[in-house]
Length: 306
Length: 266
Image (spheres, each protein chain N blue to C red):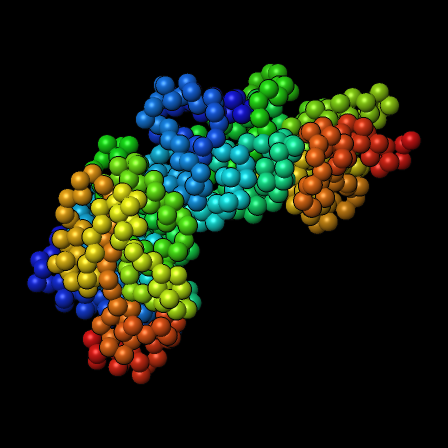
């Protein structure tokens, strides 16, 4: 999905003059073709994240649509105040491409995980936040980032993820219903999609009909549309590779408390603590109860099925 | 709008800016009068003698990275005719017009929002780079404080600017040797300050930051393709004798009595 997003931007850049890509010394190989085609539209600003984000804001002030590429923590955490003040407060068309969503980079260590990025980015007004589930959603998000005057943050995993959407490019500003179902709704974002889809299938085999909804646009959250989809569902389960108390789940919990007390709502995600275990991504998902099996047994417990 | 001004007018222009600063500090009952007075001559020189502002669409860019000096910028923009003097009347008031730190959406001429230190400098570098990439000869001038140079972002940008050949960028350091809670030189000496910039590859000039002619010279001389750093030796509170080089005027408020004394001193 990394390449799907970047390639969409690069393709557009061949037709227009305002697209500029800055890398924070990351993305070996990703921009080789772009650097050949548009050598005057690419810059590596090295290991200096504060300067990189301020610089991007400055270029945007002169009319460029700037893309900043790095591992997610390095486009958000180190330079948070530059993102807040320089890009979001000034409302500039800068897109932050954060690679390694959630636990993608396991077992690189906590410094390289982004399990609180949505907590941070959801709190920034003006910022559009996307967490695509597959390359197709990533391409749609990329096209949106090429228009409008707002900044964008996109949380991407790495490369090689399978395509979930096989037809037309979906409108990622809306919640995307992947399967119909009446017993439970599984609402998720990002690459945990494979666990969720498998869980839906297994639940179906058990006679449990699960509606699966991908929510690629985290902010501004299309909560009204989501609410419509969930109007007749008794149980809602959120699944995300993110801290459970500050991502999609908590957003829905707020809605549940204020508007939909009848839902039985349950949120799956990481506990808000630093990750010290050393595991690969699937092992991490097992550790944090984010696998297909966990989702299935969680749903069964929730709806009283054994 | 006026075009550039002759040298003879400058002391009078700077004095009017300083009077305006005193009024703003008095009406708002807010802090930072010392820092605003400190950079008044720098801004006066930039906006009246150095920057090209006649064709607004291709104007030179002035950035006050030390955003807490906002009163000085507001007074200068009003004096230069870029903003309506009426706007000053709403400075920091309830339902007012201009905030104590810079918001680029508040008024024309505020090119960059600033308040947290070490931001405007890097934004300015990005603008200078953007202009170069667009084939434009527009220039960028960023005023930073000496205390602000404790920010790591300043030195990140300082490292990259010469490598990108940003000879359309100038930083002016308002070196008044007083920050919020002491003297930078006592805290952790910048010395040798000019050599640091020079070693990073900048064209460096040290001047008296209250000498308009010297500032103009420093800001216009050729830099041999390098970005320019003007280290302007200034006095915090400059122009109001009892505020000069006094730490407390970073925060002290301008009461009615102080206002009268300050205007008298000017």
